[in-house]
Length: 119
Image 1: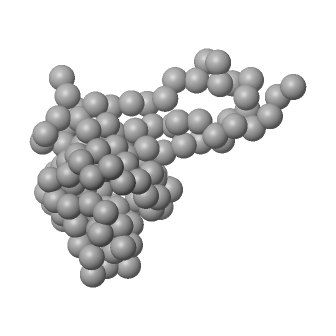
Image 2: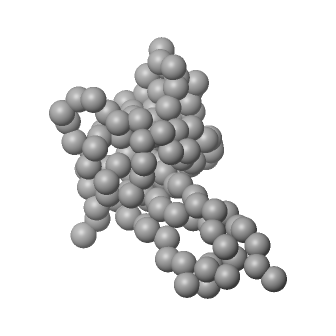
């Protein structure tokens, strides 16, 4: 019998927080190349797992509006759970039919200290 399941869609593993701004409405801002690299969508729900602090939270993705690359800016209440320099995992999920799960391959990118894909 088939049913719907939630499965890992994509993740950026071992990325680095570049900014944490508490005085903001909330979300995590990513520079455009990181959104593309992670195969994320604007306003998509994202789990932020803080490797450094051992915390987890759920927020949504917005696009960083500056020109710098490699930006991961944790905003609002979430900034109380992440500091600049913290190592994190950003993960998104998808609902799929359970029959599809045996062939499912999530998009996983291992990051380096410069917030680019590790070679």
